Image 1 (spheres, rainbow, N blue to C red):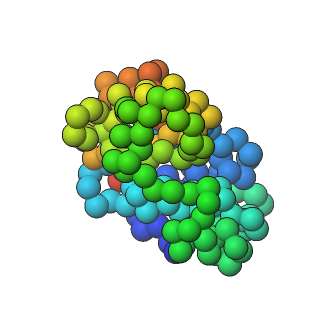
Image 2 (image 1 turned 90 degrees about the vertical axis):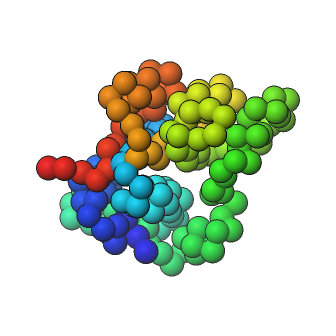
Length: 166
């Protein structure tokens, strides 16, 4: 699969592709919306594009996608890319208990509603430990106040509500 195959998220995919083509990839995005609308799949395909060794740029530099064939794309597909790890509860425990440990973390995907702390609290902790990481909040339960707090406190660059409603 690739970004162009993400169903019913044309506006979100277009925004991501334009950022990539312009060389202006922000340090974080929030993918928010109801359960089952494709937040994780969109974030996965976005990550695949960011890691792709031979990205395909088309239409005068306004659309981009992963090639799907390079070693990096194949490794992401096989869930074995050294720079892409989906970490759920493990990162929460690492951040809370492993204050003196240093592990490189490039991308953090977090829901807003989690046991023991909110996604905003979690991203704030992760930002303190890994300030250069890309932080993405995936949630179907967010309001404008949560978005503003995520941008200001968790240093999230964009808040994307899914699905798009034009």
